Length: 263
Ligand code: NAI
Image 1 (cartoon, rainbow, N blue to C red):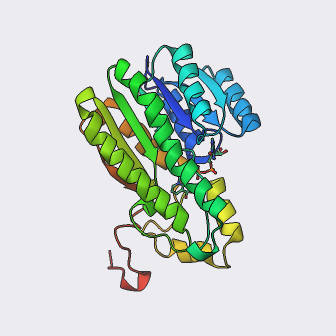
Image 2: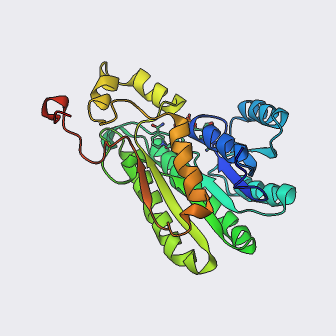
Image 3: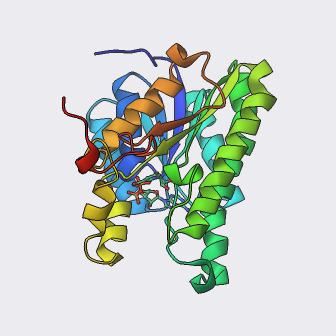
């Protein structure tokens, strides 16, 4: 058992499912005390019970990542329980599918509120506590759609581009405090979000997406969690302002199999 995070404390938003759940689990496995945050109170309580039963140090706080009071409460509860905050992972996010002219004003606003303001709020309330703890690591789960277009997902791509810009600027602003800020940019990951998306997409969408991925498959949540844990670790002490692709080579520019070189 590796205890590289012993004595340190983290917040993971969107921790009841998918990438957030895998990340919280991996950090705890490595000795971190973790505050799990999610709007899905029932799922959150179920996760907490399982983590505590396995001997981990954790608390659960339910709320909306886009609500300033809920996020303030999250940070207060975390430092109250663990006495410090070293790592903040802004992972909670929603997909907002639709061409610009089809999007309702409400969907546009909600997409930006959760995906961008949610990251801002965790940074705003978490960073002073992280600086008190001597610095630390802020990580936002952006997306490959934070660096390039995602057809049919304008609000989502706009929000994720904003997240990358926010994190890069925080990297510059807080470096002198020993606080690193990075973004992780996954491609398609096998989570409930992607299952929902594929269920509503035209037939053949899964195959169409897979044909663009050099790895030939979507990511598992634990593969994204491993990248996040690296950025949270002291081994990443010189990684600041990065937008780390975790996409199986999709963004590198994959050619269809007809052009594949013989091994
Ligand atoms: P998921 O839908 O499996 O899990 C998201 C979790 O966040 C859920 O437990 C949900 O209840 C919670 N959540 C959503 N909105 C919230 C809010 N306003 N306040 C508090 N909790 C909230 O999704 P997944 O795939 O694990 O996504 C996590 C992050 O990764 C998101 O930011 C997403 O945009 C990003 N991402 C996901 C990719 C994928 O292919 N699954 C690809 C690239 C980025």
